[in-house]
Length: 334
Image 1 (cartoon, helix red, strand yellow):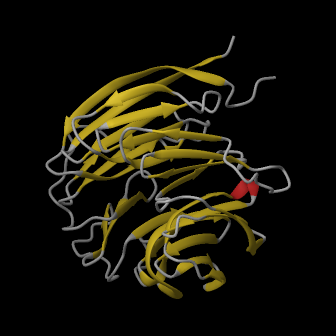
Image 2 (cartoon, one colour; image 1 turned 90 degrees about the vertical axis):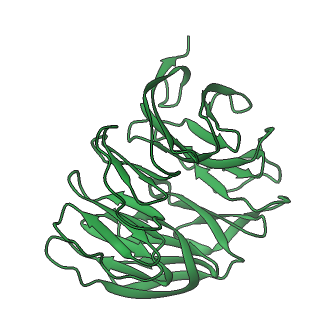
């Protein structure tokens, strides 16, 4: 029986393209496949090119869907701007930089703290948890009530149900975090050029992958939690993780590109997409890790990419405001 990643890409066909009024900063798909694109001036495209809002907030940093009919955008000064709840004023949370949602809760991370909102249709008063990791730039759900936060002062695992810090690690500026809760694994990278491979049951005894000359700013775990893909400047590396959690001293694959990699995202069916400063989006198959299997070309530096839930659509945004949505078709190996 073939595995879920036993296929190669055969087409990446553009479904539609448009241009927003500023650089595309955030892309997010709803569970049912509705696209949200937020530009640097706060204007948002919802689902199709004809539905573009007026600017919602002056400096959007992150956004998420709250179900299928509501969304939230975070801004360091304005706080949390919600659409779908008939509120004219943002929810105050100075320093907000990252947002996520799971199990009826909305999680907002900012300067040394995280705010946990309940169902926004009923309450707007959050529970605030102090993290002690400084300005927080990434917030990732790792399973159940646990969220991983990465910031200037390290990594924190937060239990949002209990309202407390589960574990805190002092690391030199965490810039990327990826997790596969089903595999019980978490990876984080820092400004010192180190990747930390951690098990959720024991974060303090992980494995460090070193040797990078530049900070590893983009990081991803494969769906099965067995492969780490990292990007530092113009280089992509892959590391294999054994069943017992061991990692070899050298990466299994190193690919050098001719442009700085600006974004990197994995799909739930095993594909990888990278975008670079030249406006090129490459798609990679796990079966051909050294060569891209398809490409999309935009008119300027790639600022955001996002896969939909089943990996059949890829949205790509550029600094010019160009937004491209492509349909991805995979074929089985002979």
